Length: 264
Image 1 (cartoon, rainbow, N blue to C red):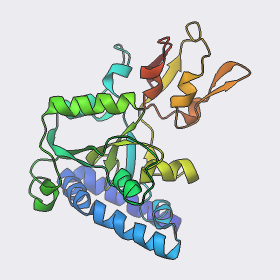
Image 2: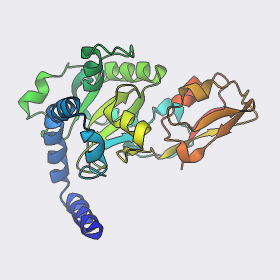
Image 3: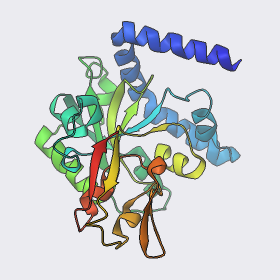
C-alpha cells in the first residue's frame, strides 16, 4: 500500500514537472479554497474534538500541502549562492504580487477571544502565477492592493517580530500560492509541527552558523528560535543543526553579529 502511494506521488511530481501549468493551476485553485477548507475542518475539530488537520497532514496531504521556510536576504552572507526559489526577497522582486490579505490563523484566534499574540493581521502576501490567480474573482476581493515596496516593509516588520516566513505550497513544494509570516501560537502549519512533528514544514536551503569567537553566550538567540536549535546549557550556547530550519530570525536578532546564514 505504501509503495503504491509512493508510486502515485512520483507519477504526480513527474507530471507536474512535464506540465508546470497544471501545478500553477492547482496552486491557484487550492489558494482559492484554502480558507473555506481550514474553517470547515476547524469547525469539525471544535464540535467533535478531532484533530483533522493533524491527521490529514500525516496522510492525504503529506508532501502536498504545507509551508517551506525562507529567510530574508539581509540574513544571508553575500558570498552565498542562491536561486530565486530559495530566498524570499528575490521571490518578491520577480513575482506578480496580487495583494496582501488577512492571516486566517491569527484572525480565528482573536475571534475565539484568545488574543495570545499582538502580531499584525494583514501579513499574507499573495503571488500570482501568470493569470491563473488573478482570474479567480473571489480571491481578489480579499486582497489589499499594495506596492512591492510596501510588501518589503511588511516582511521587515515581521522579521523583527520573529515571525517565520513560509511559502505555502500545493500540490508539491515547487508550486506556492501565498507567502505567510507565521507565529507558533496561531499558525496551523507551524503549530502542528511544533506539537506533533507534522511533515508539512520544510526546511529552507540554509543553516544558521555561529562564530563562537564573537558569541557572548547571552542566550538571546535561544529565545528567538522556535525550533529548539539553540539552547543555553551551563552558560554555553549549544547548537543543534538538525533542528535548524534556516529561517534567519536568530541572525537578525543577534546583538553580537555572531550568526550568519550559509547554504547547506
